[in-house]
Length: 420
Ligand SMILES: [Zn+2]
Ligand SMILES: [Zn+2]
Image: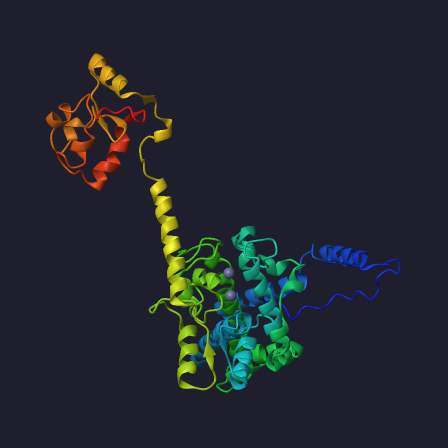
């Protein structure tokens, strides 16, 4: 998310021999795939230089206290520009914003130095539409490093970008203007302004190194963590269809974007932290603007009922996974089948400690001493049908006792063979 708006490939020099659209498209695809094989040196080099200068500045330059405060504020404001603006407003249209608010959010987002709104949003829409696949620009399936920042170093190739709707972006004058003038705007907001502000208290160099360079690295990694950590560690309360997860620590780092599992399941919702006390300052800001000003005329919320269903489905999936970890006894279909008379004869002739409950022959030899009613009662039912006694004739056994009988099954009685 650090690149400037992508340059369009010039295909005006296509060979004349192309006489139909299919051949032309094949040629374009081939060219694109060839150009995407290599390293993205300019982008990668810029990112590396920012990291090196950040580290050296931190280790060797003592900035003014005001410069530190400015750097902190830049990080916070830029992150809000990304979360409230780039992400929830422009990527997902999770709320409506009036022109003045869009200008402010566009400027704050520019401060984040993560590419133009249009550049960022189109790739983010690809990420949502083809999460974890080869068409996901930050696919977690390609490993933690790739999803965090490895993708920055590889020339991108997005064959499905043409399927992403950009009409709303092209219709927004703020987006169009920022895209057209992105480089001077980003350099101005990202480097010139912090330097000039630092100069106000005599620390122009600190303003540049900390407010300009170091803050870039911090803001980048906060956002990168959403593509990496939030697809790697945390809870899946709403869905397990993609790798997205919810993570409080990340939510604190990113003004609420850490609840990524909810967000992937309900991207149109203006909240990422759905629950009342989820740490989601971006949600609170949008809601406050909606409630107290005319700048946010509408916010989108997923119906409560839909969220509840998603949560219950996940609870069922987790319960099923837990269920499979338990030993539920022998599968009835794998049991040998015998007649009631065979059961009686075998018990008598071989002295088996067998009882009969609900069509199943139970070997209680290992259990009789643990029987809450005592071993003697069990012995009274060896070789006969104890179903009625088990289900209330003598004692109406608990659900757990019923479930436990499956652990002692050794045979099944043929239907209609039980002696009444
Ligand atoms: Zn994601
Ligand atoms: Zn999103």
